[in-house]
Image (tube, rainbow, N blue to C red; front, side, top):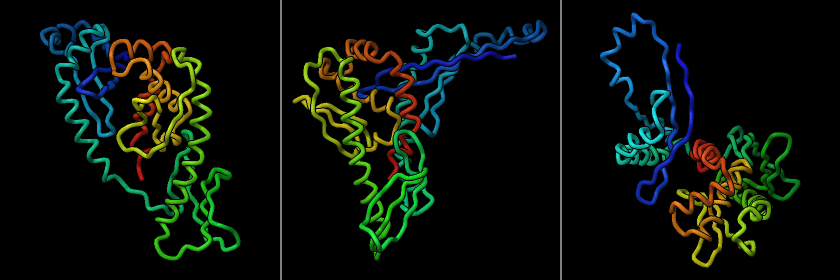
Length: 265
């Protein structure tokens, strides 16, 4: 019979913060099996690390292994982990690009919606979220219909992002007590970052972030608000982030798990 427990860890490699999942395992074995396996006890206590194609990093360790021992094992393979993450990330550019046709999936605030494209000559081209579907009405399709559908969807996302980001910024800013005035923000479609902070204190938020749940949006905003106080990923920065959002690791993990789908165009 085996018992498992899970937790999340992280480490810095260059300018990147890499998160990993820890799976601790304990296996109850019979006395006969114990005698057979005794000579393999050292090997059994080793931490094994695997990088998955969806960019999950998983460290499997004995249930009684210390967090420091697991972290040490992960750090020893930091370069190897980073290389595999980079390799998998480079492959994502070629994963099922969207065709912008009916039946595809679109995301909004963490929920999936089916795309429905209609040619409607009675109204102006528009995009609406209605009854579990993201419906795009094209007044005149003609050539390059997918390109026109994408443009309408991007415009709709941008409009929603402006409202949602403003709402969430005002909601979470009070947690960042060092912020005296709510900063302004800009929206950009980015491939590598969910957000950033300019030297002048303006937040830059990824337009694709509106596809994620609100808790993920809150995490990115709070992350950038922390940079207004601590401009790099120092120990002080992480302490600040832990203070304003104690469960940020779990939320970031959830966001990273869906990143490939949210960023896919």
